[in-house]
Length: 75
Image (cartoon, rainbow, N blue to C red; front, top):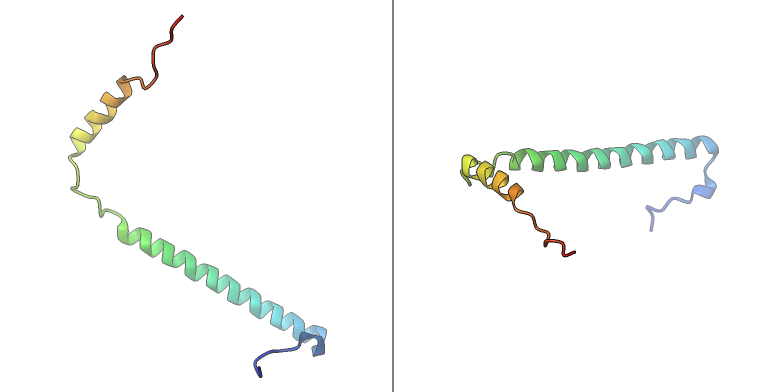
């Protein structure tokens, strides 16, 4: 338990230094997390290439737009 710091024994200047240090560490952790997400996205970009025929895909999209998923209304 030698690593535990009792902040009640510190003066205001020391507390301000510790607060700035904690803020920097949190910002670094957040930045590292964001960088890992960006790296993962970059690595996956283009991984789907050549899995489907683009022309067929586009044709299917437009064909699906012509079909109505709703049942006809009865009056």
